[in-house]
Length: 431
Image (cartoon, rainbow, N blue to C red; front, side, top):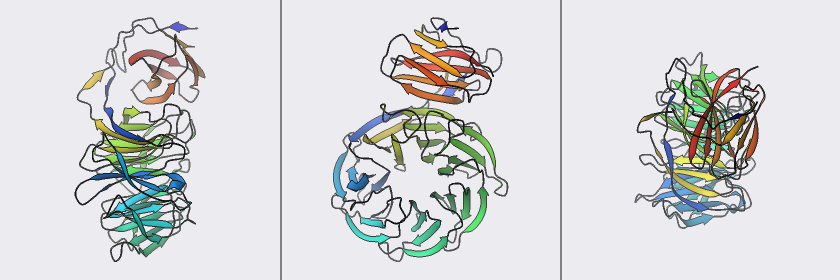
């Protein structure tokens, strides 16, 4: 039966009249530089010797753009370098050099001198790979195929190979202190001690055959690791959180799933995870308690793209010590954001007149949401009884039918956004 939501909604969660509380941060748009007509890939940051900040934007076969973002409200392209017919996918920096790979192992990586950001110059090459990371100590970690480590210290334009391991396929890697986190597709997440980069020592492995170990990041204390599964199906988790305090026996402690989108990469700073979530845009998760992560804020970088698939927010970079976040959108260009932490905990006890129908309720398979009219900024979020986001979708029509068959039986809360108003409705799912 249809239930018209022209009612007073008072939410009671968990026990008796205990209200549902949540910490809501905000993503603030500081500036943007539009590009279109070709797929845009990753973005990274570079700070020159006098403190100016630059975005290094990988621009498909057009190469790499150097954009001055010192004043985030007025980003200016100041330099570029040709792709030479190949697509730069990933870029990292060390000192005044940028190291660029094209994802394909058969395509040679490029070394770019950024001494003068207005005139970047290719000065060297290195073997190709899928992705790279460079430690502060000057070692380049090249992922896929396998894991290869190069020393940049003797000569940064002639990387010296010091280690090779082809036991796993490899995909992405990050360094945190003396630990290497090697996210290696279906092989698992391998964690190494790299006190001696020429001879890494395997400390432990997170193995989960159902997870495609695409990328991730450890918590600040390294007792947890967050793993992103780019290929998760609508019934699987996009992000899983693992307790690795005992590296001999990692175990899962929490997860996050959005059946309407694919997750890509993650960047953790203190108590927040900054996540590029493809068509869902840029999302920030509160990971203060890694066993109970929650969505704190989000910004849709491309409102024309929705549903599972690629496109939207590809990469992120945060300038350390500042509140300046770079985000690359595959078809829209470069965004520059800041993030504001919650100043208080808000209670979701609302009294609103809502002109929308939600039916059937209870439901077991499909849920239809029908607004009285089409307006900008319509969003639908479904939370479980403890406030965890279970489904999220932006819509641009008056009526949409969602699949909820993957959600277990229980009490849920549908959060509806329209014209900057937020409304809540209780939902019962039965099996």
